[in-house]
Length: 331
Image 1 (tube, one colour):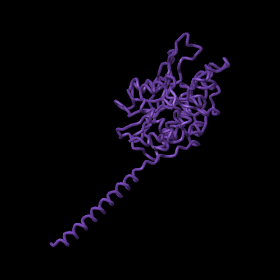
Image 2 (image 1 turned 30 degrees about the vertical axis):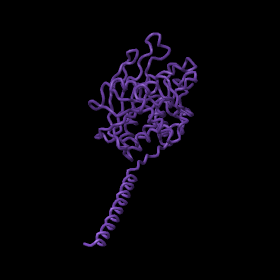
Image 3 (image 1 turned 90 degrees about the horizontal axis):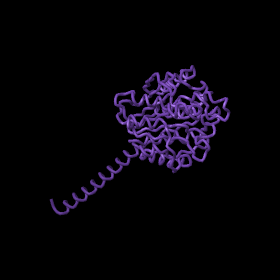
Image 4 (image 1 turned 45 degrees about the vertical axis):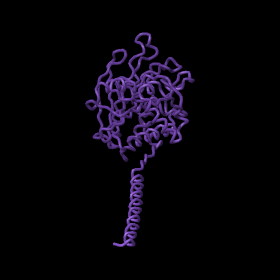
């Protein structure tokens, strides 16, 4: 082979390497494009419908027909979305030793996936309107449209979307019961401020799967009020600050920074505390609490006025889309 032939072979080799590199770059680009994450669109109308459907049963207080009917509805909808559903029933003791029949509703998507995310809310409503301005209403059960139903409505819509399109991680949606049976204000001198979060305590001590754990949890509570703002709740920051950061950054990306504000919040005694205490799952609480308000949670909180007027599609959208974005961007 003479020098001209060697030169020709050298040039051909360079061209082939260049083509190969270009093809590899195109293949990588195509692969990256193929795995681009598509986050489902949260339907606020749907979440609002699920919220109203719960409220229509009446106050969802354990030991009442409305509670039984609504529990069956929630479990049935989650099954309809394709989840594996466990109805964890238990007889629990209230602050005054009353026995109540409670039911935690656990819906699992892709249960074989060892990487799991926990999404939760409470589905019961308060038996006492003990914060109502009218003392005659203090023993009246409340509708709990914002305090309970709104969060469950958001989770039902999230579950519906997951049933259509699975994220990379497995997801467990847990609707805790008997969260809102804490000692009413008119009896705290007798019993003290106890009796909250009975359903989540029971589940955390008796998980639906042996040694259950999750990468992290997100609790929704009072997430549907018009103009709600969510501060970084104290126990969430103490036990799961990286998850708070993840969720609040997601809200900023989506344009919901006016809802998820960068301010520290109070410590709220809620289900996420029990999830961390007994199962060591870092869990955050997305909850509307404004220290500038007289009651913190709003004038309607634990009153007969917590009805569908306190449910906003815009707030449901901000929360639901942010949670969906977080879940679907989890590796």
